[in-house]
Length: 103
Image (cartoon, rainbow, N blue to C red):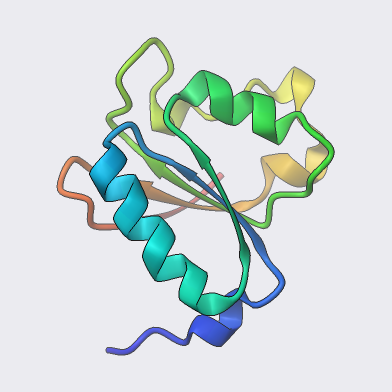
């Protein structure tokens, strides 16, 4: 099945992946859709981006992040705007294959 990259046009996507090579592959694939792609290698840095001024439209995160925060834990609700808490999220298991998840 081919992916319709046009669906990403104008969206802000945050990729949270500690494996640099996999993060780069995802980034390169998503840039075909003319969206704005942000990258984070740790859950902690992802939270910093989520607490920022940009409205993230889609979160793609590694479920097995190295460090204290795992991808499935998500950002602490107290510091993130309500619209960020309900964003579409895709969890990447260790294999790098996406698993749809809605928080």
